Length: 328
Ligand code: 8YV
Image 1 (cartoon, rainbow, N blue to C red):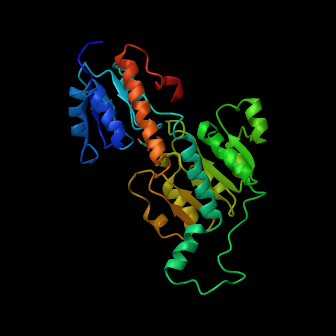
Image 2 (tube, rainbow, N blue to C red):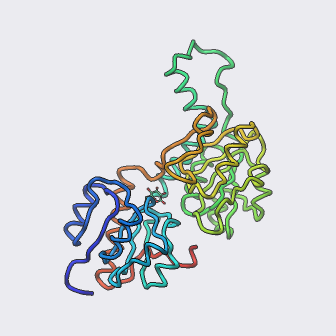
């Protein structure tokens, strides 16, 4: 590794303490005005950077990577999801890709639980009704939601975040079910009293609440297709804190509009920041602007991870959070 400081190009504004530490360690280019970079700006960045530190709002595809200079050796993503990076193309060019797993697990699980509560108990709908002057005093039948205790939760993707959500949901009295590529270790399944469903179709047909917690890979694109959404019973709700592309958003909006699904809580969308306009008008749908990991603590820890990955690389070690082809 050369003695000079690594040129690190950071594509978005990061927490101040993270940026300050990066200034100490690296020859860093920060993005003070925090505007998302265009494809041309990204291409220019990979042409001059030793390390690129992008986020979910940057599309690092084969076209951008084709512009990379030979000095670009690391893409240290600020975020856990990496579907916006063409990892295979990067690896083929000898570029390592890293992410920030583990530090946003609890925050994202909190948000999924918050969405379950919000949709099932009509929290946002009630707050909006009050703000609009529609609260005329208590009545026995107004704004009734559904009880959580005793209901079933089907988690799609039982990794770190799925398990953290399952722990929360179990404490709220939900029974835990999951669909995953592989069953989780026995001791974890036992503690959660979790049932593994080999068949996603069969699980969907029996759950009261379904939560998406899997990564967006070529294999999970539109995993919840129009056909699968139709398998969910009409009283069921869908929660998505994973990635918009895992659900056919137009088909979801259509199902909700026809009343054949009771509600949805979404933090992510297929074409962010665009949201299917039909969803915006539905009282039984709670929409958040991709806030899953948005805590002061979580974002600081994500920054630490980015720095640790770059530092390890700079010191001649293998960065700890490499994204490996087996994860795709
Ligand atoms: C991040 C996320 O804030 O880490 C992820 O995968 O979805 C978000 O919570 C975002 O990816 C930042 O790049």
